[in-house]
Image 1 (cartoon, rainbow, N blue to C red):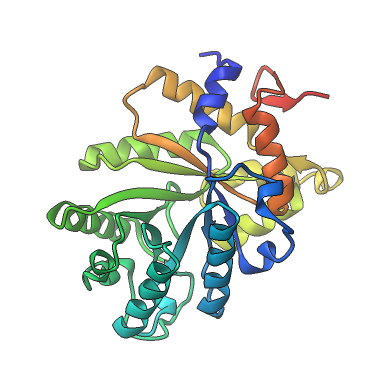
Image 2 (image 1 turned 135 degrees about the vertical axis):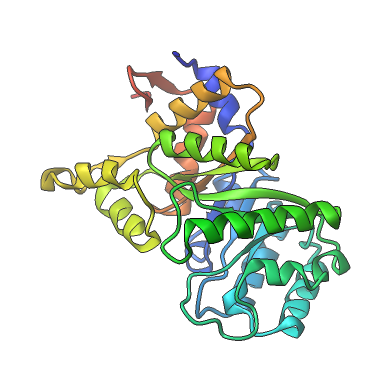
Length: 297
């Protein structure tokens, strides 16, 4: 099915971006790059200080953005620490929505081994959290088996329903639409009705995308980027997720009842460059190709 520019704009409406404390330090003012009210996820990376994450959250609030904080279970020592983190977010009036993940470390620093264990504390309700994102892996995860992924997801869905929590799924990035669609249909088969926010790799060089793909351990669609990287002369060429976006827009046209509701951009080439690219596409300053699109010259 062909896709139109308005349909691409519709898919990308409300797209969120991501900032690390390091990348945020390179942004003079977020208002120079995205509209006020834009959702910006703030990472809590292994080995980092949560105070740095809080600093970015506070700054985003002051600059009119809507921050969503990552809470990584395996980097949080205990329930008391989690309580303090959520309390600090509440003090900043930034506890309405959070993203909970297991976290990419082999050995937990404390008692939490999974995001489900954080849910069980009931601390989110205590601190006024109204919406919780949970991790989705359309191509599996190197850290957990497919069976364990299914069991964990269904347990969180059941817990959310039992405790009247609004959950949604935020996915790892992929390079192709086919694995995302197959995974989406699989979730439907499991009985999941959660809305899905699809992770997209922001425009970056093929070399950069390959590096992040290898770190993340994403699955089958990595063959796409490996094929590009096999040509050494193309390593420094910029790759944008235009074909993936066009395919997802086409899928939504054909399946208006899909659970895919939003997109999320991972700014591998930096926040400013990613935001500028997104702004151009959202304004419709693009030219459709046989596959995907390109920015207008």
